[in-house]
Length: 165
Ligand SMILES: CC(C)(COP(=O)(O)OP(=O)(O)OC[C@H]1O[C@@H](n2cnc3c(N)ncnc32)[C@H](O)[C@@H]1OP(=O)(O)O)[C@@H](O)C(=O)NCCC(=O)NCCS
Image 1 (tube, rainbow, N blue to C red):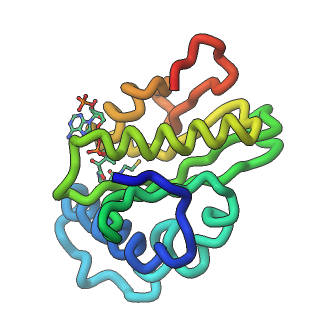
Image 2 (spheres, rainbow, N blue to C red):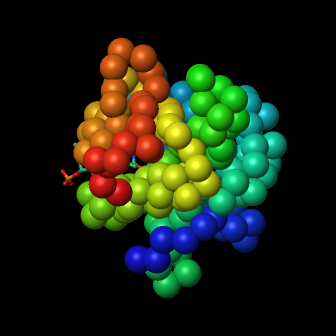
């Protein structure tokens, strides 16, 4: 499996995977009413949507997991400036792994790529969007070293000398 920076050509495959992940989440949280939701609303969902992907591509902080030309995982992140007392903050919007290849460290490695790249771009902190009822995501963030409290964001001090990424 190759882990590399996301490119424009990846967007169609990443879109398909991100929508499948969002749909999966919806089917677990509300009854499966996906087909009844308005199409224009669905078109705007996710960082891979036409209106949203550009800053995530430009950031150099978004990655894909690819093997034999197939995309098996993605992570969308960008740098935010002058927010939450930080000059540079890595904002992780979403990540997802194809259900066929989950639990093979792909999510972990994608997250690690983003955090390493964020550090290289002089970020002080990373914030990641997590849902409190998403156990796999919470466990993944804890495993890599995020601090999670009752807020719905996860924090990591990228300047911690003890941090091992
Ligand atoms: C969350 C997600 C990205 C994890 O990807 P993954 O490649 O399967 O995760 P990894 O194999 O890298 O797992 C790393 C660690 O995360 C935790 N973890 C992952 N999946 C888990 C699960 N189903 N149950 C409990 N812990 C889990 C474990 O601590 C795991 O380490 P371990 O295997 O040594 O126990 C994946 O389940 C997914 O795409 N889910 C749907 C989309 C989603 O919820 N995205 C998160 C939005 S923030």
